[in-house]
Length: 293
Image (tube, rainbow, N blue to C red; front, top):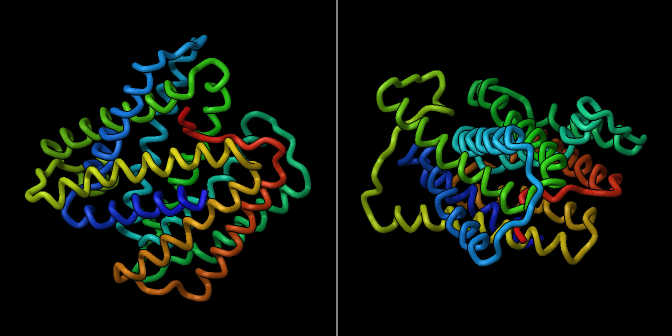
């Protein structure tokens, strides 16, 4: 899981580097192009066996997952690696709350305490000032909220679909939606929707092409290690170690020229990590999203 967290932070760092020259929708496109090749190869070698019957929910999961990836890459560009990663890892807190609101799951006292601690941490991190707009902070949190919605749908889909089919729906959405976004951005540019609408720019040198390849490969490696970690150890302990992604992101962000987080933000990070770990250990069963067999 430590390796998974490191590779996911590398994915974010590469997206930040590429984001200087390319729009985030193009980054989403290339990230999924690389991954879909490996998933289709896996399905070709070992065909899926599944009941199916929830195509609408499968498409919904793909669309929502792609939108959350849009917001993540946008937050990395506008908020920085540390803050964006911190917001991203509030999703277990939103997942617990949405499970109670939407599907009627009962939350115990430890889970309510975890939600309270986590949202307190969000208040410490969510401090819009003259350099960071309210909109950018909201989009950063929107990534976590949509991630929670996406993971919640996996609970329903995992019963009737092969895991690889669920992953494929996400990756195909992550290819089709950016194409639409770039077509719209080319002919109907909308500045106020810059986190959804963009244009395609051809890479001009080998380093940029390698960067796009690395973007997909690091995400794939992180997902592979994530799957193995949940397979061989207790879910709560593994999920807790996953929060090291925030530390990696802060350190990599520092080496890329980002400022050291303020005391308030560090306090918020610790509270969010504490809330997420409390949720992870309070749950008897943790859903492993996008698990690759």
